[in-house]
Length: 262
Image (cartoon, rainbow, N blue to C red; front, side, top):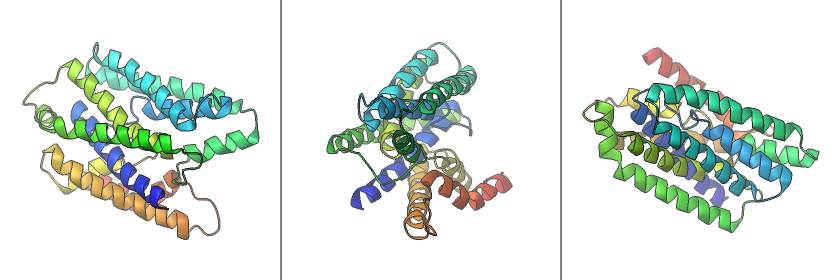
């Protein structure tokens, strides 16, 4: 129970903070931590680990996401932001296709179910070891530290006061990957809060200092995830409710606010 709540907290901070960083890096409200195929890579790594048994699901997810990030790192050094977004969409589709092939060739139904429950996102932490937890917390600490250290430069970049070098953007992408993977590798991909919550934060507060949006987005992300977790745990009508799907339903009013206010 306490570990589950810990990862509600970590996910509620890591995903919105990573999302707002991507929006500031790209100067685009469609910036999202999954835009460059990181979510698809996490699923591919988890699928490969689950079906083959060569490592834990968490390690497989991290390794594959790291490889994906390094490819995007190299691409970032060569192309502009608009081309990077296009590349990310195409690359994510490619990685997702590989994941589909791996999953559809699952050797047993039990392994397929194990992977699906992770991919649907939950905070039950089945099969997660102490080593996985320590590794995840280290990734989270590094990601948050990098976000805080880079906040002034990101704000100035977003305002157009300075232009970050491609190397700086690539290193920022790597730090965002650490932050996001700290949650995704344990709990599975969780949608909406990495894209919708940062946009809601920017609607609520017009200030451009990214540190303010770190706080607002984190508070909203934690609150939304905690509500979703409580609904899944205690108001589930006797059926299994995946976190991601349940959050998408609960977040519908927030999405309406987002589009109406825009």
